[in-house]
Length: 361
Image (cartoon, rainbow, N blue to C red; front, side):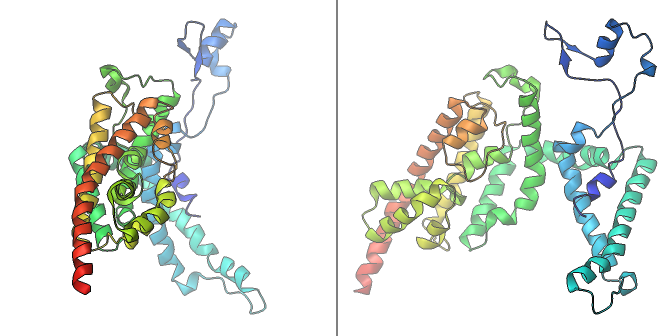
């Protein structure tokens, strides 16, 4: 039911004869132009095409779906708690069927209320809910936080701090990150699929690409897992002299390549570790800044495609930039930088471990 709710407030449909046809010179032409040249003189007699606007089903619709979904769920829960709205079935009816009838009226009323809210918003403001959310909430947030590197760096400090006390930082801030930065990725994808160039030139900004988006963050600040700990694994293989650390790194290398790092986080451990906690916070912040810089100096292409978060590093950079080798090279750069950040702290930590072991003997 909740999946259908955003459609209830999206009552607007687009009508017209627009199309994405192009002529031999590559210029856009409409269906109306084609019909006129074919001898049709009265286009009013030609049927129009109706349907939901592409924006409503893309980046701008995502924000609406999240907000309306939350509101609708609260309304549904309020109706669900009212015994007078439940259809009581005989005891002989299987429980699964009986529960389905119990929620029938609350579900219907939720759709009615949400639809009424959408109608009232359109009547009072002259804008549909999707358009109002985009102009009043989504776009201001994108302008304030979206391409603001300082805000994003601060966000990754918070994510790392949560992890260092044993809380899944990425999940804690997902409610903030996803609604803001996922539409930015979809906007980039739309431009890319429309054929807008992502050539490394200063004029690229004219096309409206966003530097920041969820895949860009995965590519530069989340490879190897939170704290970009794949670089710690690399540092351990090169510089560690302790068998216990090397054993944990050996167990962690395969999941680390797929950006899963719980074996490192709780195995070393990084949780409540005041020494390795410093690079755990510092490395992703530095990496996201380097990624932002590489994109803005046009060394790395804009990130335009959604790539699964489990995609191994380097390959992720190649795919996310639309198949550009410079994307892969950009990820190699941040991997090297993050490894260099971890090395001195690893050496200090191992000296501490050795001292603790000697005192215990």
